[in-house]
Image (cartoon, rainbow, N blue to C red; front, side):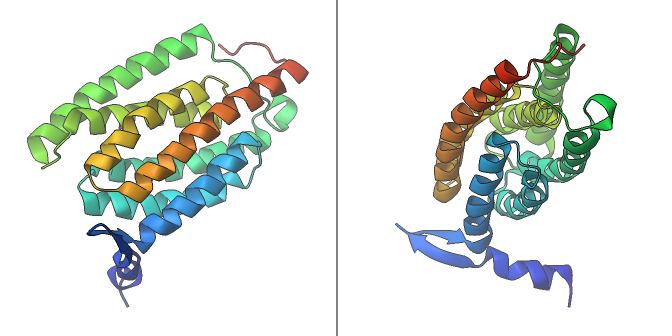
Length: 213
């Protein structure tokens, strides 16, 4: 049995609404995505393995919808998920658990420059070499998502602002691509991100940490 044989059923329709089919991968991605973000809000370490399963599912959804940058992004998310898992366990003082901190000025400059460069390069690549109908928005959300994931790995509270920006763009983008369930998922993500921002701010107030470089 090949990998395609194993993964193929996940792209079969789970249900159809107003003539638009929703795959099992999108349904399972919906459920695991909500659980993952809820666990991140609570700073629970199990968000990482569940999140890795989630990005595999969503990668299949994005690939089938022609959102190629988002599909490729899921591969990077797996690597970042492993990195974040290790960081949360051993990235704190004395190899202990990581605490919530703020993003330092140097880190912000690096993130903004990397995000702008990634957006420009990905937009050009998607426009020239793929049939993506939304190359700029696909590239921008990819770059912002990578910036936010890095911040999440490092427990930087401002990562929630980046995720909020991503969600605001993704919701109409997925509606445009007829991925209504995934669009609804990102509405829930938006609510959870606001909750996460408030929760991590409270965590910093209880146990303040020095600003990172």
